[in-house]
Length: 350
Ligand code: SF4
Image 1 (tube, helix red, strand yellow):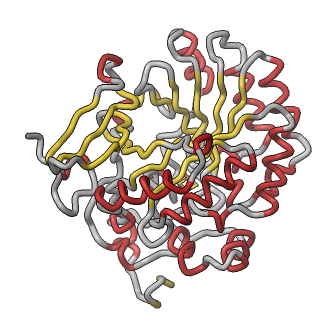
Image 2 (image 1 turned 90 degrees about the vertical axis):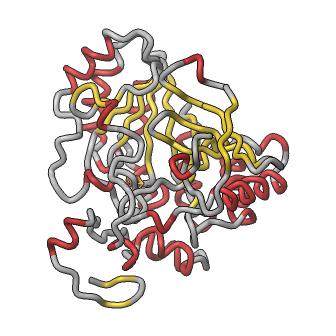
Image 3 (image 1 turned 90 degrees about the horizontal axis):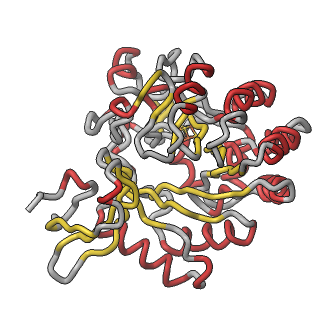
């Protein structure tokens, strides 16, 4: 196997035992990261490393199995349904927390959209769905249209979100002449179409990505961005502030900066919480008021936790941004800080 650290012979069973994703990256992205001048940082996003052979971590860090109500549909928070519509992506991120899906025909993706629509129809509290995977834009527009056949008639669904990194990996996918009609269908059904982009670094935002975002925005598509805080890639407030400012300039609102999860074979991307807080603070110091739209979030088994600050009492202060129990949302809580801690579970409960 070609690893960042050099060539190494890795047995097939070692790959499987460690849940190592096959190497696949688009020509466009390879060229973009070289052209951007940030290859030395961005290579870690797509190129395999010997550190993936370490065993720490889990393949389901956010309790996705426990929140799966039928194959391919997760219902963790009352208003949101998460649909895994594919187990493929156009390129594979080495830090992905869904890497368990890749390289085999996963039984975790939706195989019966009628059944999924039936469940959503029976849950009026679910006002939005997120199409994820994998990346929904590996599917043809015709296939996405078929999925909408099931979702658009559900009157209480207000928003259809698409989570995608294809705008970084293969932005020309969004030049498909059939796509405007897809988004118009959503609009005509009285619902909001939202594309959640995944730019981790300013060097990933190509001219093509920007052009396509601007074209889709003109067609009533709203844009949000989520990023993952990644050691060696973007653990630099200057870079992330530039990324978020660029997103705002294109009409893409940054909303989550995720603390990297303790994913098996990808924990080396995690940054200690102390450093993460410094980075988040450094980003905010560089952005104007209207650009400070992101939250630094740990997507934990118990819910989405906003990481607020490390107090003078050496406790880490946090707040539930999302929780299965609505009463917990917005409540500030704290844990004693331990040097080097990267995740809630690394902190004692006292
Ligand atoms: S594009 Fe998204 S789903 Fe696909 S490998 Fe990257 S993070 Fe995972």
